[in-house]
Image 1 (cartoon, rainbow, N blue to C red):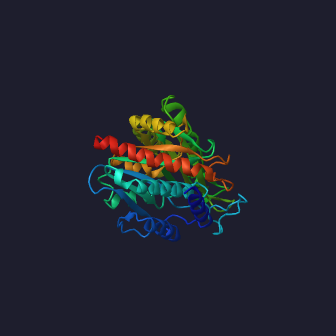
Image 2 (cartoon, rainbow, N blue to C red):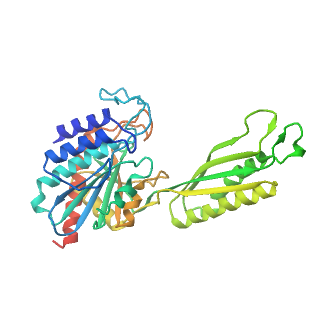
Length: 375
């Protein structure tokens, strides 16, 4: 099986596809599942799959992998590097899909001993924060009692599992502000209302939200990532814009930051004689791991000979949080080595980590089904 998984992983790495365009990826995964006699559910979606293993009755747990790639030009030098120019599996989704395929094959071999069902989700469009919601909207996961997922982690070696109860991934929101003044000749600023000083003051004030309005023992990020104003050197522009992101680990902090930013934009613009328009777009919620599931996962991993470490939370985001609105779950760090962070053009995942990950998720799914079934 290990050789088969490595072959699968290399194929997926060579053929990356962007979010909602994962047609070849979906077809390839489908062919392996069908060949293995694993049932497929009808999602009605163009990309992505949900497979099902086990008995018709009993509790249901789910394993989730994502399958989309990133618009990154690969620089790894691997002999199985991307054959799709400008697109790369720079976040390990090829690893995730392969490891969950391995878990599915292991579970299929023990199908008669599973007291319930395991639904294995091969989710599209994680990188654009849409895929999990699409899968949830199918209704095919409404009966799931527990969700499990993992993510490559280049700072742990193969065979290491990072576990952390509570908040493990941040929410990820987008904010946008447009400041409107009165354009004029740059040589006569008194004849207009310059939106740029207002914009600059907003950028400065936004940096105080975390340092002065968030509990020091909480975690949050406010980053202004884009500013734009004017198109020539001698005209005071009519408008100026800024855009950025908010990351938070709790719902309260997220709400507080949104209110504070909106007040800063509105009040600062007014103080400079400008008008302001403010937009705040909520994207994934924080991923909050169930503490009891994490304890049991650490026990299973150690029984399998894995090294278990308490991982640190990340201010990155994950739409896995959408599944946790249905049922509790846990999101783990899977050691894959490599030394280059996710989204970097030199990111790699060690194929030696595939079998430990597949064994862990298969064993964890079976263990949780037996617990839920009371057997």
